[in-house]
Image (cartoon, rainbow, N blue to C red; front, side, top):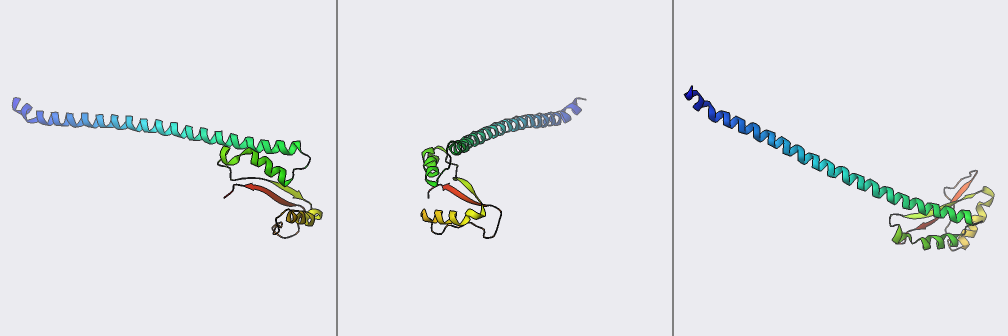
Length: 146
């Protein structure tokens, strides 16, 4: 019996060591994985919060533009440009690429609108696409310089 014990004891210790090593590895791996998952989830929540915060700020810009139109009988190109300039979009809202509004133009007013905008310093202005429609639109944008 003692010979049998001497023969199998090293193997028993070896297998026990392997099992303990494997279990320790699995526990460590799971802990590391859980830590990474928690960090990933936390960063994901932070990104979502930042996006939501930025979208709320952009919504405020749109509400401000709405207020401009509500407060004014007719918003001219210069008034709109001045308003958007005062917003300081480059500094305060760096993600905004442009702000604009669209005029609804009945077919009877199309030619006079094109002419008036051309006289404002935009000689190539036209409404696209060509063709007859029941109503036209004309975009009055502000775009980020450069």
